[in-house]
Length: 393
Image 1 (tube, helix red, strand yellow):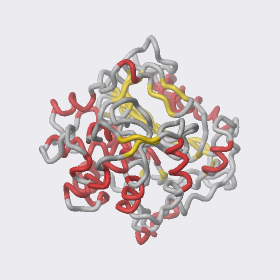
Image 2 (cartoon, rainbow, N blue to C red):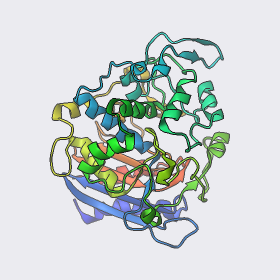
Image 3 (cartoon, rainbow, N blue to C red):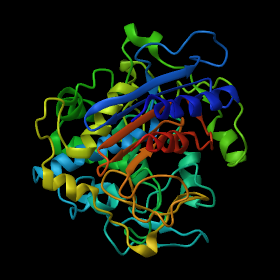
Image 4 (tube, one colour):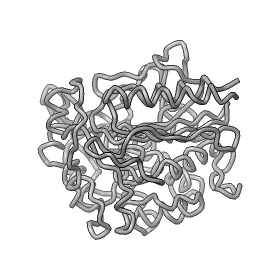
C-alpha cells in the first residue's frame, strides 16, 4: 500500500470539513493486525478554533448496539443464554403483548418474542423517529429517547407496557430491541450492564475510555455535539442539517451519578478504543491474542439471519440494498445490489451522530470514523470506507 493511496482518506475527510458539513473528523484503519492509517481534520467544534484533542471522546449512539450484542454472543457461547429463549422468561412484562397496526387496529401477538428477535431487530419493537409508525409515536409521546434520567429497568418496563408494531419474526425493523437485550444481560449476569461490559469486553480489549459516563478529569476531551433535535428531525427527515451546536445532555448525560445506561445508545468512546472492538469483531480475540469468542462462534455470529423477503434492511425511508443482518449488525450479502463501495461479507454499523465503523474478515480490515453531527444524512462514513478500500492492493 502506498502513502498516496492512504492520503485518499485524508482528502475525503478534508473535503467534508471544507464544505462545512462537519467541524472535524477523526479516523483509524487497521489492516492485517496493524494500524494502517489514522488521522483527523478540522476543529473540535464549529464555534471553536481548538483542534480535535488527543484521544477525543465521542457519544457513539447506536454504535453501542454491536458491543452489547457481542456481550450477548459471549453469553450464548457460555450457554447462559439461548437464541430460542423467550424474552418473557426474563422480563415477564413482555408476556402476551398486543400489536398496534398502522391502521390503528389491535390484536394479540401470536408469536413469542425471543432473544434472536432482539438481536436481529425482528422483535416487533420500534423507534420514536420512525415515520408512519403509531408505536413509534407512542414512544415519542413518552419521551423514551429524550429522558436520560430513566434507569434501564424503568426504560424497558415502560417499553414493555406499550404495544408491538408487528408479530415478532415477521419483518426487520430498526428498534429499541438491543435496549431490552441489555436488560436481559443484566438479569442473566446479576450485574449492571456497564460492569458486565467492562469485565467481559472493555478490560480484555484495552478499551480504557469506553463507558456510560465521562470521568470529570476527561470532560475536556468530550467532543461537542452538532446538528438537530429529535423534534427538528421529525419535522423533516430528509432536510439538510446545519452545522450548529445542539445540547443533548438531558438525553445523553455524562455524569456517572445519572446512572444512565442503555443497550441501543449511551456509550462514550474514542476512535482508538472502538477500533479495538472492530478488530475483535473480526476474530473474537483480545488484545493479547486470547480467545474471547471462539472461532466457530465468530463464524456463527457473522452469518446472515434475514430471509430474502425481509431484505433489504431500511431505517425508515432509507434502504441499504445488498445488506442482511447477523448477530452484531449489517452484513453485505450481494455486491450487485450494494449502493456504496464495499466488500462482500463486510459488516458493521453507524451511530446517529454520524459515527461509523466497518469490519471485513476477508481483507482482515477494520475501520472507525468519528464526528458529532446528529441527523446528518451525509454519506461521509461510506466515502471514508471506500477511500480505505482504494488503498488495498
